[in-house]
Length: 73
Image 1 (tube, rainbow, N blue to C red):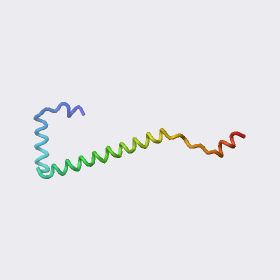
Image 2: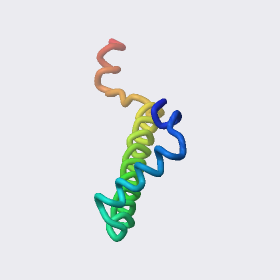
Image 3: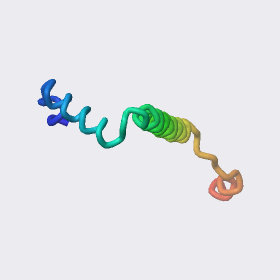
């Protein structure tokens, strides 16, 4: 993470130039679209799991009435 913060403008230009050489100008929009949809799916799944955990924590535990009757005797 700190590596990206310490990079200057020249380093970014070199990286972008290398990506253009490797993939070509026509492929980059497709790559970015795929990356964006992947991030979107990941965030949706993360939010679904978080919501399920919160719902599970808010549910009251179900008790069995037969067990309660036996313990009262």
